[in-house]
Length: 343
Image (cartoon, rainbow, N blue to C red):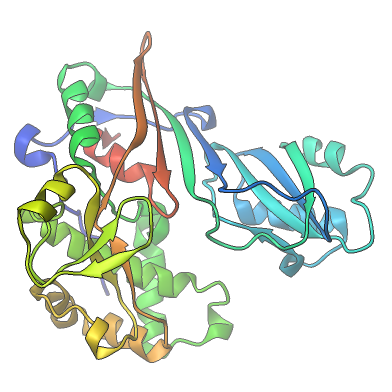
């Protein structure tokens, strides 16, 4: 059984481990706003709702909308999964061809702690992963903010970026999702046992974090290496390099390109990165790697680094308010893990 490790932090070598702190004493301390690249077209079979929720997961809101609108959960679309212990805004769509939403939909949602911020019709269902960024406002308290070191840590993250770890919520309480994924892959993954693909995602996320931790440990997580696949900042566009040069190093220093790591799965031989980092994963975790390949999930790439977009720090009486945006799929908890030890 795989036990959850402690992954390497990029700032420890310079500053040492961070001091204890808290970042989610109450839901209002963790605010998230999902940002789309487009607006609904104001017509069509799907009712799009931009909702604000508190202390609820996205899937819990899906169940509520399903019941109130008299549709199945499959008729409801959403782009990303949002945290429970937080105040979050996101879009969801409900397939209502030829009919209006129930007249009491908004007050019924309000009574359950869900506020409709905006709504419009659109011809298509909201698909997973179509939002561009998430905007965060996070309030931090505790010993971690009592020294000037906190500001220096923050400034360094703004300058060099943040290791793009999958957050602890991906692995469940005490890593139980990882242990479930390990057991499922060892006996053979079946879609009927993992409808949402969460176990596949958990295993791939763990392997990615292991690779990223190894590169943080040797200082190469933000530097292009010969044989790397690089990703352009703000896009999913990737390109392979056989060698590095001063131009690529300068672009990396400017956060224009980022090294990537493998999201394990099936891929063409020409697409498989055979670096020592990927080879180490196969050696150390053969059951996970081989189980993912047998599942048929397609290999992909993920940036090893994320850039804090429009970062701001505001000192308050007994706390610090951090605000920034991140590309979809990146975790604010990865940045917080560099700034404080959760107490």
